[in-house]
Image (cartoon, rainbow, N blue to C red; front, side):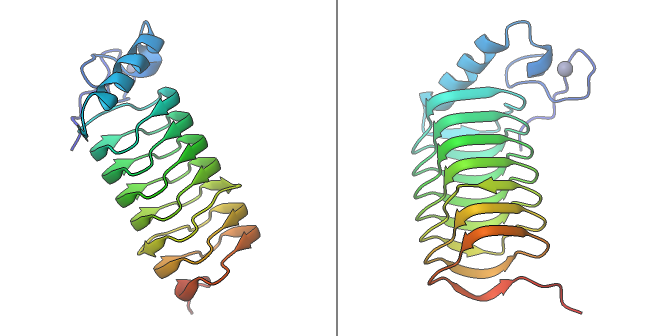
Length: 195
Ligand SMILES: [Zn+2]
């Protein structure tokens, strides 16, 4: 798992990988964001990275394998994660604008409290993913397989889950406006709390 090195400023946040400080305490956060962006793009495997509270814009992170990384409260704008595989990655309270997760293989991820606008998870395998309390607007999960995932308390607007294979995935307490499950297998989806 990513190292639990805490920020030297004593704020309680984790320090950025290869830094003594967290992003909010960094003297030059822009330089740190460029450094981390280049670190991600340098190789295929991205392991044990701590990059929380950072901002990434117009980045091509496609085709990477992410393992045990922390992007909590980071902001991604026009970032391409297509064809990535990810395991044990934390994106809690992260913001995503116009990003692609198309043709991805995602397992054990947390997007709890995240905000998505125009984010595309199409043709993907989404296994053990937590979207709890997330805001999901103008997004698509079309043609994906979902297994053992949770959208509990998520706010879903103008979002399509068309032609999905949905198994043991929980939608209880979701707010859904213009959400389509057309031709999806929802027999094993959970929409109501059982008594
Ligand atoms: Zn700090």
